[in-house]
Image 1 (cartoon, rainbow, N blue to C red):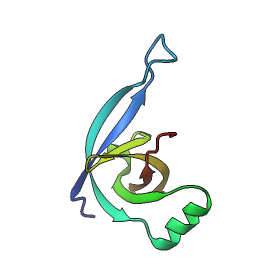
Image 2: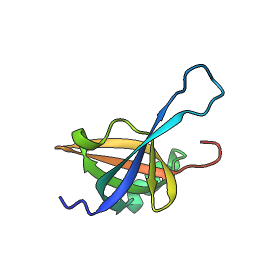
Image 3: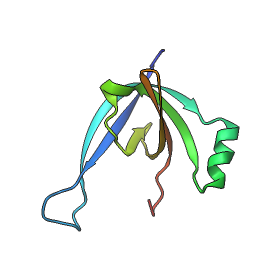
Length: 100
């Protein structure tokens, strides 16, 4: 599979001694394939209050470590769901809102 684009995976690490401190962010750039969300999948997700934007496909074991935030083309996205198939993982993401 051709992975010809790059995303940044963001792992949020809680800081010691501070419930009110923002978590530290560790970032890692990875190669991926970018797809738009199919109409049927978009409307199915929309019925559950989700608004998926992209699906990023990347190497399951080497690249993904349960990060919840993805940076792509200057925008911040939250991982809505993951789907593992063969030796790849798909990350379905939606835009981060003020209340997320």
